[in-house]
Length: 112
Length: 114
Image 1 (cartoon, each protein chain N blue to C red):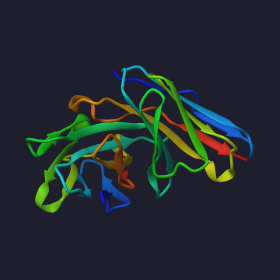
Image 2: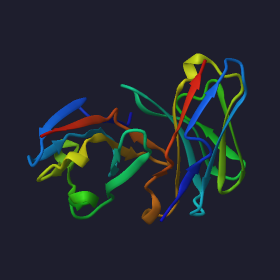
Image 3: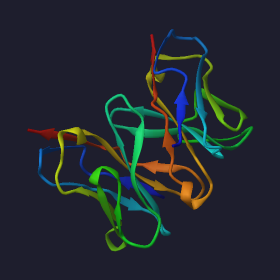
Image 4: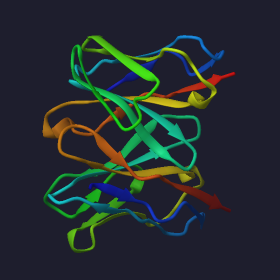
């Protein structure tokens, strides 16, 4: 069965430090993968997506993600975190059809 | 820009009331979705619709129904609200072409049932 796992429930990073949020998926075919961010009390905003081609994808707000088929991973990275990046981050997989399967999310805190 | 709007940001209802949550999208998207979001559980799909008057059950449809009479509008109905339906409800829409596979979300409705 298709699934998305975000191993880290909560991560704290110092402002200016680099960030990597982990995402692992289980899916038989080539996946369509997404990262979303949710600020407190808000809906989800798309950060980036992977459909095919270049395995390193660039997104908004300085985020990037790398698709690694051999590791079934799609980790999100940012070289220098800003306090405004504090939010909850969701990895998602589009299964056959239209629905998305979401991970349970990783909450990012940024310390000064 | 795609815009998905939800009728209320905050809603307080009593147990047993019938509750309507409305969602409207302006991108002519074929697909619309209702999720509920609870701490530690992430987003769980309640229902989705891939066309007018068409609907499919998601992972947790019990206690909910939906209506899609027009392409742009998708309603979630709680026939008899219960306290365990207190949650954040998120609506989303997406297209059918590769360029529009991602889902666009509304701001959410935080529903409290007392």
